[in-house]
Length: 141
Ligand SMILES: [Zn+2]
Image 1 (cartoon, protein in one colour):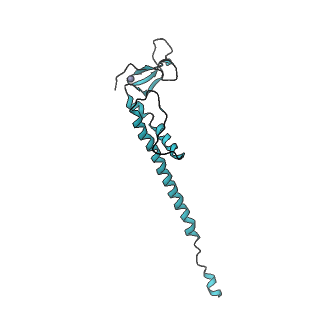
Image 2 (tube, protein in one colour; image 1 turned 90 degrees about the vertical axis):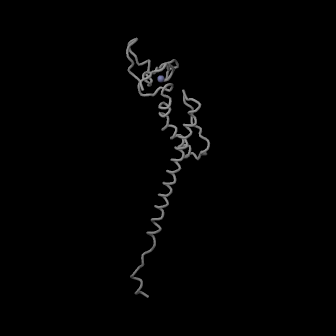
Image 3 (cartoon, rainbow, N blue to C red; image 1 turned 120 degrees about the vertical axis):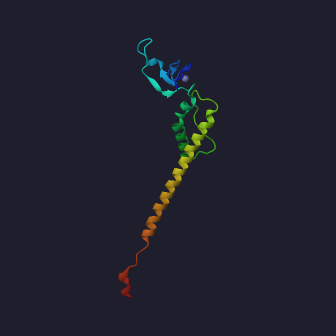
């Protein structure tokens, strides 16, 4: 991938276009000390315009975590309500919904595993508390 595009929008926190695309990654235009000099900060974030799929994947963990947290808050599985991100395209919603639901499902699986472990742990004292036969009492009668 060595294609640059004309992406030139606010991205790194400025309210003016502070990002440009170089070889499919965003660079911070404010990281240039000398006018016309080279940029010192950037290259980590895929370009939302020409590397859109890669760019969207940078949000996957975050969206899965939102799904996980929604489960813990007893939110319904059917209503993903993750926050929208800038540069998001309409079809991204479906992809993010899949991630959100995965997070929710993982949380549920985790919860099931935890309650199974608790159940297993709770069996232990019962089994141990069965009184062993006291041999000394037999001859007392
Ligand atoms: Zn680009």
